[in-house]
Length: 78
Ligand SMILES: [Zn+2]
Image (cartoon, rainbow, N blue to C red; front, side):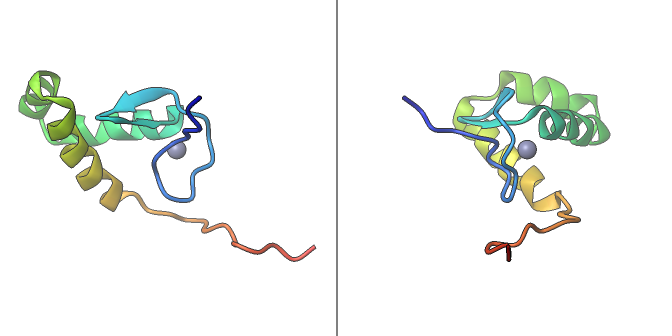
């Protein structure tokens, strides 16, 4: 049994779609699509023809561009 979730750091959402060998949640998947679209139609076509490992590199590049507006506290005080 796989215990996977969105590969974006600090995101606890359930996986929705693959990004390379990993999975991202719906929100981040849409964000990833938008990011690739901004890079032009060539990127879209290129990505579709890529192997999973090549997609990992693209996904990692994208992950660096994500702005984490709210960083959840590691130890919430209750
Ligand atoms: Zn996510």
